[in-house]
Image 1: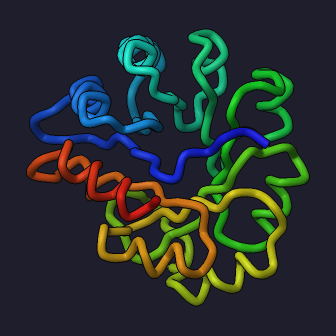
Image 2 (image 1 turned 45 degrees about the vertical axis):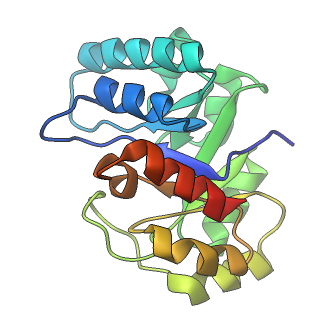
Length: 205
């Protein structure tokens, strides 16, 4: 089984910083896993951003994956891709990217998790934990009880909790058996990103 970090940082639009800026700041703050998530941009613009971010992550030895865009992940030789429920199926992405690349899938139900596992995913991003404005077309909120049920019923894939999670939620989420968390706003809008990431990593050890 591949090594899946316990703390995933997901980039998002910011009024002052570009996605490249956020990746630089996160890498300098000792993050170990970044997912580039950009919606509603032209493909050539997204390719250019991903290329720059990949170069930054390689310099810092940070795992770098992209949300949704399998072709870009292939062409730029990224570490992997994260696929939503309406994106390319995991098994098709696996055929394109090969067995060594990281592939994660979004899940909201036990059926979603089992489908991703059967198709060769390396981990599942399960959520949302609570309501979040970061994502459109939100699936039903799970809460702690939802994660507890999924962890006890699902098989061996690492579950990464996602969706409206703050630092104060981490211990209770870990206590139900989840592998780790994926955060966007909690890191992006932190007053001191380096201190925040250090605190989060300490919570997750």
